[in-house]
Image (cartoon, rainbow, N blue to C red; front, side, top):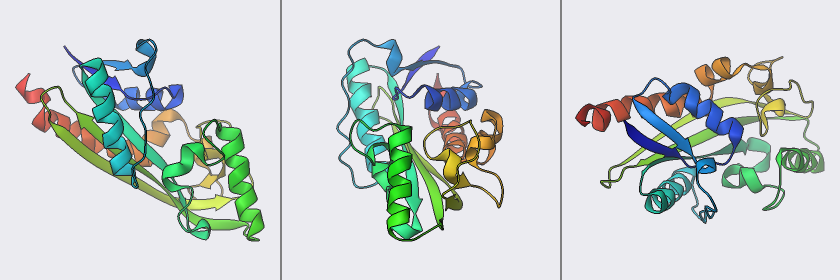
Length: 200
């Protein structure tokens, strides 16, 4: 069975990805399965560039096929921020709590109580033979100052998919059906079946 490494240390993100990829004939590993793995330098200007940087970096170090994602939130009122800086909006050692507080602070500075926004995700797959595949996904919604829900991660409690519900109020399965990462993963599954797995 082909081994693939999910290039993430985020347990929740890995859980979401495993849920969708579980139907494929793959042995799915994550960076947690490797000791002392350094971080990739994500200095790309787009989600696609950063996903590819990570996939190439960890494929080279693990000598295995690698799937990496780069995803984030783009808020209209903040001119697209936090964008590619979503995971480190409040600094390199930021967590969900400090990033969300930074988001609220920036909106409050502008006197904004809600804003159109979108979650975006780019996935990059790099195989041991050099094959590279990129897919992406997007979901539009609204960022509001009031958090709802205890599920999800990142900015999910503030990302409203309709008037009353946030991403943090969805189950993992519900989220995968509509989310930016879910859309990118579904397209990736199709492309892996078409370009990689059929030749095993």
